[in-house]
Length: 381
Image (cartoon, rainbow, N blue to C red; front, side):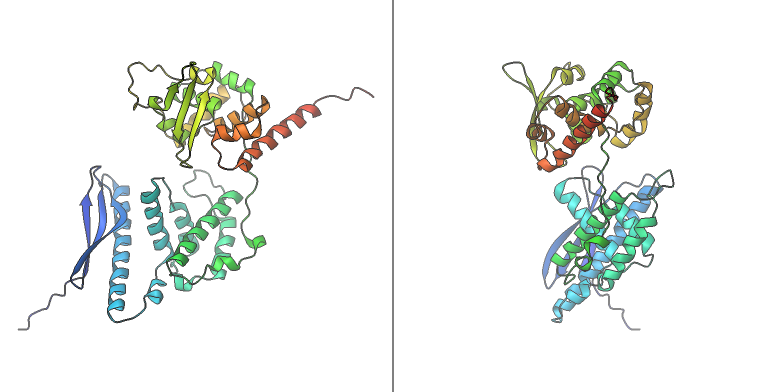
């Protein structure tokens, strides 16, 4: 009876348990007498429900795809073959997910490519690889987005022009990444004319007038922390992610009694230092015995949930506008410009890295002024 020879795999998938209960997935590679490890920035989570199991299944599927690719590369290198052709057989959606996970680990920011991947899979159910990626494929995806529905939306809404442009920009980023890694010789999107690309429309920036802010101050809301945080941001202009992370140590009292808010913005990673007005300070909850590391708005709920319930408060205050939490930032910008602050100062207060971003608010204020002038009746006839 012949003995079955067991061939030892040069690359194995292993996991390492982390302090938060998750498991980091990595490759244990033993090639030509040398052992190395490749941490994939992929994580398994405790399986508490069906969704957790589905997540882990997708993670292991991606890890196995990467492992298989690595084994092929090892074999090609041993036989003197270039792996550039092999790389081009990587599936586009698998690569996008892999790079997105790496970006999250590198930047610490919650960057997700799930919606882009969802629409790519809806458009192309088979799943092309980089070797099959052409300008025509990109054209087809652009056409698909024109009639595609929003992902996970309760209502049957089409994707907005700005979202289509965002998906196009994301796809370009990932394909450019593949070019940099020698998976592709060039980006086929470079051959698409400007007029054929999805165009961003000028976004409508809703904001509240000073009278509307006063109405909200006078109107009770069932979640005080949301009311306080929103009004606080109306008077200082920081984003939800920053006010949610705000600690008492971020508030510094000067010798003259002025308070400054000192943070590093989560979105831009840029530091800002903002003097706080008395109106902003009024919205702070009592400090009590809080430590410098304790959060100021400790009970603040998620941005998504906040936006879902904001309408009950604004309608109660008699405000007909569609108000999300981010409207507080727009309100602060337009309020400062309306009260006479110059564009450069407002740009610095908002933490903008480019003054062009602030100019949008200046145009909004100019339009509001024009509408006010147009209200003057004809008195000379």
